[in-house]
Length: 120
Image 1 (cartoon, rainbow, N blue to C red):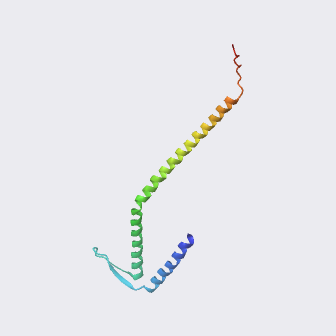
Image 2: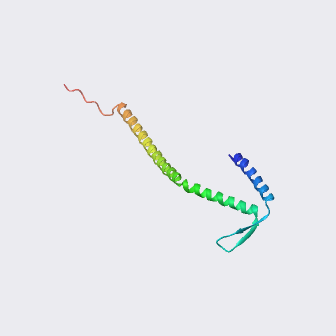
Image 3: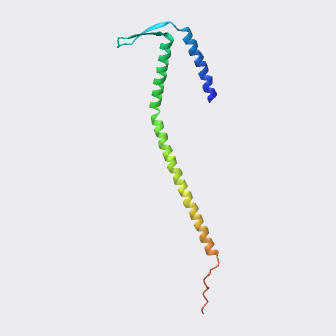
């Protein structure tokens, strides 16, 4: 996965550098409704707009994924509860098997009490 990110990142970085090198002419930005103007190279204006758009898109994706993250947390808690319940049931079954073995062993062992004489 790391290689895929490098395969995507390196060409994008090269394109950004080439774009910046070929678009150094100044452009005036009016910051309406404020009475200010900025004179910046074109590549800075374009790259800042791209970054702002990327961040806005990431925010929208994060907000829209909230319901899925909530459902995942709920299902994880449910799975943890079921795991704990399964573990408790396995322990109870193990205890029951142990007690059953002990009961069978106790009934199969020779009795230490004297046998009752057959009185006729």
